[in-house]
Length: 109
Image 1: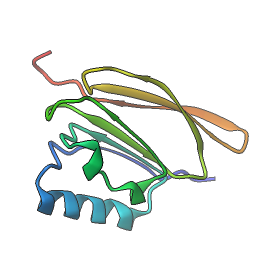
Image 2: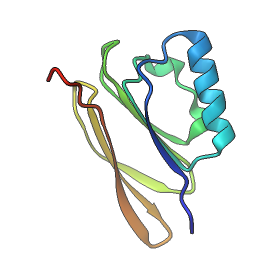
Image 3: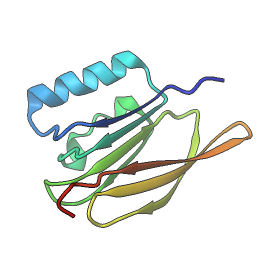
Image 4: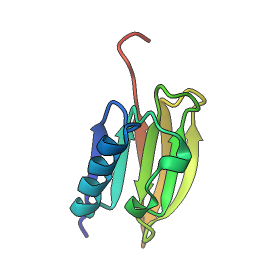
């Protein structure tokens, strides 16, 4: 079985035109797992059509990592930091288990 996966540093998706283009493009790719770094948006602006499971780490307008995982995967949150720089989830499809991690590490930390 193939798993389609992308990880992308997007440097913010707060502007409506950028957010619309980004989520449209990602939906078109029909990915199983999407990891986004430095997403910079509030949870209510998230497009859940990318995946059933969504985790956003971080509460400020800065930082923010997101994981979208399609519903055919069973998933469980393992850890997410309070600063929006790290989130890890365990995923399972049939008998295969994996851990997916999204990390944002700016140069100034």
